[in-house]
Image (cartoon, rainbow, N blue to C red; front, side):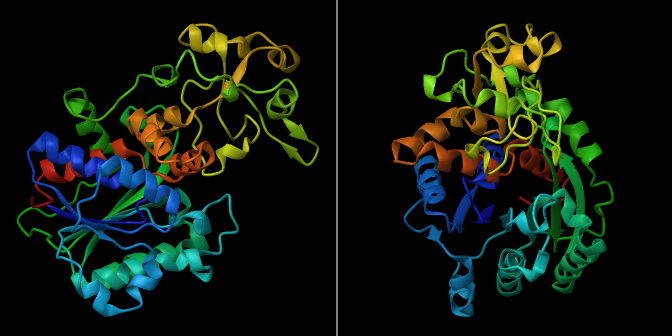
Length: 358
């Protein structure tokens, strides 16, 4: 199965497809990848060691501006991409297609229109379905159907696939290989979860019971919060902004691309050392006031732990760091990544039920 990965980041789709290939004995070849963030490219290349004939597309806007560039790509079976989501997110201005990042979906369409692979697998924020009263998503479906694809989708939570992180994302599967003998009628998060639940322990995906399986008991002192900043990060906010800021979440909050900026504990993930060392058995949040909590040793996630919460091996962060990628960039890469187990589970369901030819 030949694969083109767009908006690759640190290769969440590639990691999932590589593991599928290993587990189901399917020959896998990545023919190319696009990524504009130079630091993400450094991590990607350090982790996957792309072959010389693999196309490094770089800026997808510049690449797709010439159809000859698209035609020069090797043929491939599946296109994947977590296209930029900020413009559709509840956290942003929701400018949608009216912003340059929102136009990136049409660069996917440029490639699909020329190469016409059998499959496309795309990921975005949950709010994509509701953006602009549903009109944005209707346009996306209509564009894909206009090229002859049948389109299926649902919202998936990373926490349902044995990665302890709450992260709701829409996954869209588009296929030109619709079988009349076996039409795809049962594509849903529920059915994907049920199959994954049966088999995950014998598969190559990383999996954890809860966040304690990810947290290291000893980390560098630089990851601990200073006495000055702890009261601010633990605060529930001011009159203009109120939200419950709790630490020691047994299932982590959604990782964000800006977690390196260290938001309050209502948005980012922080853990007390006693919670970590006791594997979650001691949780002072239940008994202490915010003032008392602020006197404890509390730290943020390390980049390695952030990568693990997305289903990547911890050494992926280490490999990026060895190439000179700083922690701030690694946090951004983890926050922007697709969750490996979610994508793996979707592909596993499609392949095991013969909805994808491999």
